[in-house]
Image 1 (cartoon, helix red, strand yellow):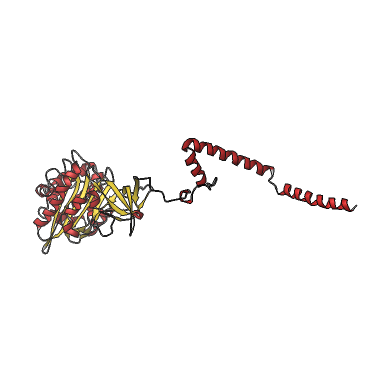
Image 2 (cartoon, helix red, strand yellow):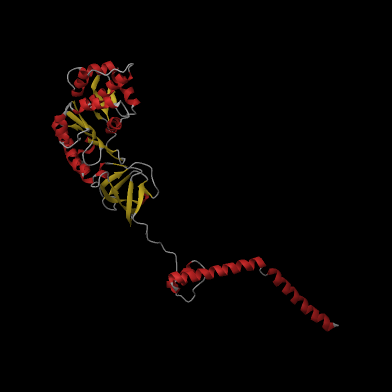
Length: 400
């Protein structure tokens, strides 16, 4: 009896342990999942060996945690390391206004200033004490323009931008902007290529004395008033000719007849031209920015104001108004047969300001619009030479 009880006590724990083992063991579903993982890993091993070979496959499996390689010395155990940027070169866009330098050194001189949205190509990275720098290339509006330089990598984004390429004159041609560096803020320019959307601006939001360059706006306003009359009534050709050449009192009389400064300001606002301030009682006393004048001539170029007949009339009178001065500044090649450049001159005390604005249509090369200004010059001749220096270098860049 005692022996039977002892044998039963021995068997019952054994049965309990067996029951616990069964209860704690993997279920049928778990066993199936393990089997699937085993088969999947086996297929992965075979595929890796077939593609990489046995040693790389073993390292790859250890790297992804599929197995361990205890026999490998710790020095050659696979570890995660920073990978080189293999995605170069690649396209990127300026995320902020950024100065591009000659070298990855914050103390070097800027090559160009790129506005947000300007497209570049990243070709190299270099880390310095000031951060990670990118070597960037960019193209220009013509195949001989554009440049390269260095900027902090944080200034660029890798996703696309719907903005137009926008930068300073150095983004168009660093050599061109260097030749005018001595002028500082006494030189301003806005240069636009409508076919590609490239826009380059330097000091283009600074006001300058428009002087008799205002006659182009005055001619457009007279033609617009004639179109708005019922029935439409074109202004006399004689009046337009006298205004275009700045001869006699025709411009002053028409300025007053149109409604003086306030009426001209309203007309320009209707054209979405911001940055022109007509002067009360003085048609030559207006102020403007290069941005504003570029916008004005763009409306004529694009045909968004005036009828085709009136645009042709305005272009005819204005293009024949100061041909000698335009040629002295821009040369004989610009603005082309169907282009229009209008010069403006104004003396204020002992200083002179001269501008040349309009659009060029060349036989070869892209069409472009420009508003260039030399202001606060010691003499009229000095202002003319500054503008001529700019256009002499611009001509081969846009006709290539």
